[in-house]
Image (cartoon, rainbow, N blue to C red; front, side, top):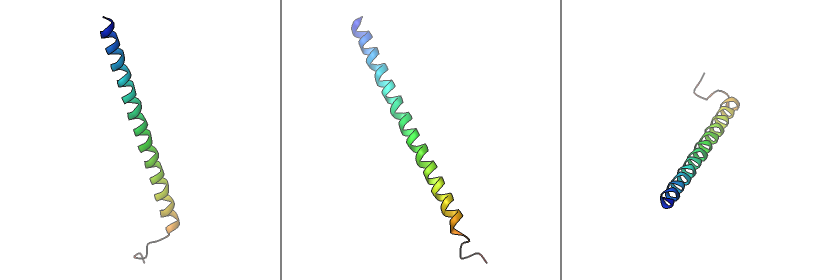
Length: 54
């Protein structure tokens, strides 16, 4: 019975570690999207009109 409990505890720890890794990856992607959006908007605001507009 102890071996089964140990195995289940290990599996729970592994699942928790995977979830933490997934959340960290999602947060990284969110930060990168925000940075890209901010940079793109700053460039668009200071760029003025494109040369092909009259």
